Length: 348
Image (cartoon, rainbow, N blue to C red; front, side):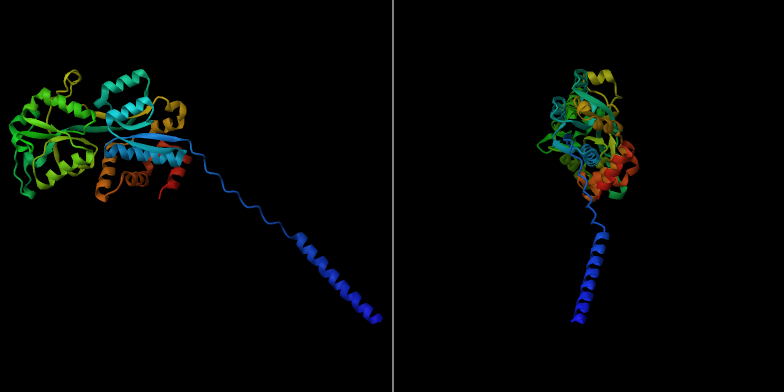
């Protein structure tokens, strides 16, 4: 009986010791760490509406700026398509916030009035070295031995010579007149080219044709060039077209401000393209204005972007991404280091 009691006591002690050891181990165990909270994304600051003008360079610059403003600053970009005059009115009224590529000289009167009225603010130059004017394929004047093309208008040098060569450019709807491919209906240069034709007396020999879009104008030039046919019209740089095809400008009298203001009977002036914003933006989004004041590229850079688009059948969004990847040393100079880091992290 005593032996059994001793055995029971020993078993009880073993159980008690084991229990104490288990409690000791549990008491020394560190509690599970609290999960690290996921940082909340920065709240969106609102929508910025861009004037999505009807040519590729303006649309690409819109999307370069839009990508930076979205991923670096937290704004949501929106792009409203249209042409020069209605979109400029939208900028004045505040329906549009930003126009990245205003060819000021083409809309000088409207620009001057809006600046004087205080409805828009000019933030500076997008690129300083653009060109526009009338031109023909170089093979029309010089020929092209490699393509077996003989010169068709060897003496065509200036607008004064155009009446002698109208038959090279027959209008399919009125064969007794030539055809001149002007810019797009709604662009300010449509009005300028019409005035030039009247001032030069060319409306007696040519009809002015307005293509329905920038793509249609490019297609008319490219189609004629690839066939080695005559083509006469208006174009501008930077564009992939003038980067790809050898064209020769038609001479006009040198630019003269007084003549320009009277009837446009002279060459287009050298053009700087400007970044404009609605006058409310400096108060509502000063960080956006600060960024856009630093934004500046060149026509050469823009031509390269547009050539990439053409060669790779890329969209304007894809071209903007390509620029941000290939020209990091350029755009990072427009923003602070922390903004540049956010934008870089967002690139594919």
